[in-house]
Image (cartoon, rainbow, N blue to C red; front, side, top):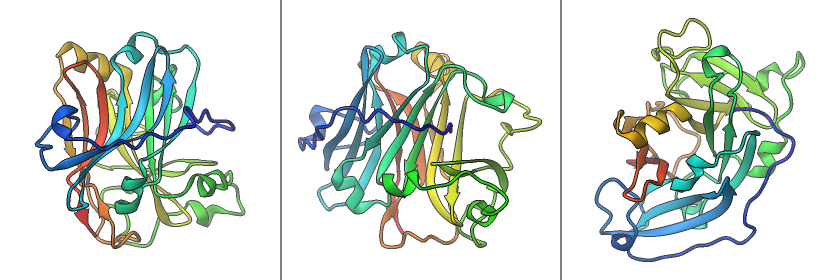
Length: 264
């Protein structure tokens, strides 16, 4: 969740490929009634990171996310790496999400609990242009980084965390053992909500490199965790996810995704 002034946009050509999901399975559950669409791809180390979406024949999103190829994890760069990756156009049509702001942070970032190598993955409702206009917080614009009206964040997301230019305000689940102050467990994976101008701007799974290493070695299991839901939504008429996932496929690629979409 680090601000940056320049982004690598990856491959300028978008790949939107439709084929039977039985030939390329990404959803950990049944994909027999889905089309798989690929979005923007970029290099990371000697591997690749690419957005994707699984959409049913009826136009209902089944899963959206990122695939990190297996060789990414043996060639991660020593420097901070930031990317803006567009989601497939079909995903943008049926969900509120537009793009993914993806960062590899080899030394993490403050506070101390997050100062370990990890990935930040912001799924943005805002357009890229709107995101870039988010100002640095100061005494004149505090309302832009205040909580939304009651009901627009999940009720447990009451802990304000970093307000960052070109990003927004982060909110942490008060019941999580991982907190900016007085954490009771080390950070391995965490899910945050983000706001700007008192509206939801992004959803963010944060994943420690140590968790990926443990997942690939088999010492921890896949994550398929419920996303706590707000009572109200500004994004009515679109499908919104209720679960996030961290898992690996048979080739050792690692997927960060959300699924279990419901129409709001």
